[in-house]
Length: 355
Image (cartoon, rainbow, N blue to C red; front, side):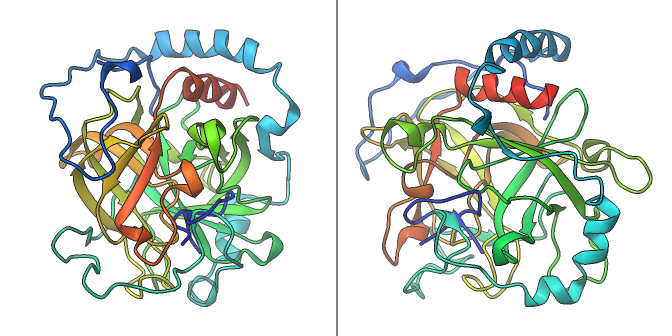
């Protein structure tokens, strides 16, 4: 089942349908913990401490990273920019409430992207014990809509990350929305006006070595720049953003927020789950168990130290990874994966902030 979005997905992907980042916040690196078994009780670690990120330092480091990353193949950028006709105003005119309501997933490709599962469990609907619950959403998390190739549904989830130009979103690498795509923060199904507007995506950046399976699935993350709105405002100045951070360890407490598509979850509303992660055996990825993350949730941010007051946190992962972010089968919505955020995600971030 596809959980995530559209940027491309592998097996059950969840597609559906910055904060500036410092180097990190973080405590234990990937070698710091033994792999947890697929199900067994995770080893609890308490009191992860984060070093407070320094934006100026992050930008300087980003520039240095960028000089190196500019040498990667051209397919590091997945969406061409410079489409002068595709503005945030044009995106808002195109994506009317009626079009959003009638949008349908284009097909089964893409992890937890837009595709629907072949079967659904009635015992783990959002809100049930051991599953995510529906809620009103947060400004820094929203959905991706795409016009290209009939991928008209909101097929993936994305989140705003703090960045120097205040124009950056994070999603899964398999969620490539193509040209003339839009980001809708805190999406409200059926609303005549979206609470935080509709923003045209300018350019996307994926890792050139990303694959759906094997070691390349550890690189299933992507960034995209977003054009200013009709008033000249940058996205982050309107929605706020989450701080990109190193994953503190394979066992960590996170809040995961995503948007299943209406095809998978008729409520067509945001879901959230607070959960403790483990390690996905054999991969440099995290694993969580929480039902309700159907197609459309690819790219959903995994937020550490989520602040209920500011509605933001430190983003230390996103739904993605092996098979597009989860196992295959009718109950794939119960288990989700995330890449481990280390040096590679910061190199890609550095590439994205310089455009």
